[in-house]
Every structure is written in structure tokens, then in C-alpha cells.
Length: 281
Image 1 (cartoon, rainbow, N blue to C red):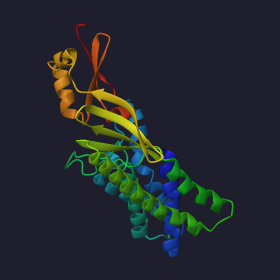
Image 2 (image 1 turned 120 degrees about the vertical axis):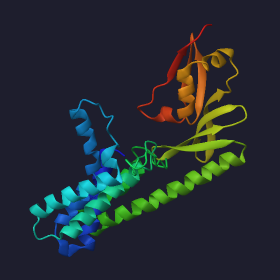
Image 3 (image 1 turned 30 degrees about the horizontal axis):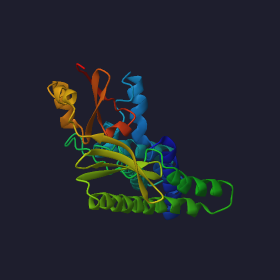
Image 4 (image 1 turned 135 degrees about the vertical axis):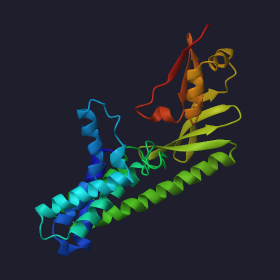
């Protein structure tokens, strides 16, 4: 998710922490707040190492990284707030980090929480990287409490309401997938697009990409099956073989003197680049 969402989540969880454990003092607020942002430390580290953002969602977005970050943060906060319980500081920091990992796993980029034991990616795909409904759900109570319009406990409650919203998104995605399958799709994938939905469906004729508008399905683009001889010729390229092993919804289109291969799903990611194979006319 975007940094603002993580900060608002941390603020809401911090408000919940101070409401649930008021005897722990202000330290638990900072534990929860920092916990929701700490995994993204891999971004400045990656930039300092001149690796771009290739290290993002790697070692700090794992359970092993969560334990290490929790231990270091809890000890640092205990030094800053000596009256706070080290156990509670660690607990709320860990909850914040796990909430961060969980939300990141709900969008298309996913996380690999079990690294280095397993490289398996968990990716539910029901939240866009920036969800305006989620921002309003977390942001309005925070602004209201800052202005004195509502109690701080409302801010903490917004953290719980957020997960209720996530459940409605999961249910909606499952319903839309069933609808596509019932209408003849061989397989389908629902893609979050801000607070609405896109979809990708493989049919007998090819791959279809579209969106929902007021409950109605609208086709945006159709990729026919690979019947063009130029597409067939590109299959002999070893790069295409590797691409087909990695792509979930591979599609091809002939443009000028090249065949452009892309993944109908992954092209929605900012880091995706199509594969271009030169062919004869």
C-alpha cells in the first residue's frame, strides 16, 4: 500500500493501543505507529545501495524480518519510555508490522512472508495500491479527533472497521469471479482498481480484459488466440518460453515488425515491461 495508508493505519492502531492498554503510557502508541511503517525501511536501504527499489518487499516484509524489527524497536522505545512494559511495546510493534504485511499481501504485488524458508508469494489481490475508500475510512476519524469533533476511541475503531471493509472486498471478488465462470470463462482473475474492479477472463476465443460499471460488465480489450503465424514463429525464441513459464495470463499482439508479449494481469503493475520479439513481416 502507499505510505499514507500505512501511516494512517499506524495512527489508528496506536489509538487502539492506548485505548486498550491505557496503563502502558504513550510508548504503545509509538510502537503501533512505527510498526506499521517499519517494513518500508527497505526502500531507503535499497536507494542507498543504488539498487533502485528492487529490495522493496523483500527481507523486511517477512516474518523473520518482523521479529528482528520488533526486538530492535521495542528495546529502543523502552529506552525512550522507561515506564512502559517491554512486553507490551513488543506486542504492539509486532501487531503493527503484521498489519503492514497483511495489507501489502492484499494487493497485486503481494509479499513473501516465509522467506528464507520459502519463496512463495502471498497475493490476495483485493486492494489497489491506493484505495480511496480506505484512506477516507482511516483519515476522517483521525482528522475529526485532531479537530476535537470526535473521541480518540473512534480513531482506534477505524482500524477494526478497515478489516471489515477488507472482508467485503474479498466477498465481492469471489462473487464476481463466480459470475465470470458462470458466463463461460475457463478461468478468471479479479483485479482491484482503486475502489472499483477490473477483470481478466480466459475464454474459448482468447483473453478478455474489462471492468465493472454499476454492476455491468464492460469489455475494454480482447486478445485473440495465437493464430497469427508470426506469433507462432516467436514461440521458438527461448525468451518467449521463459516468459510463458512465468506469466499467468500471457497474451500476444503483432505490432509492425515485432510480436509484443505481455501478461494481461501483470501489465497492471508499474514494474512490468512487455517482451518484444522481432519477426519477419
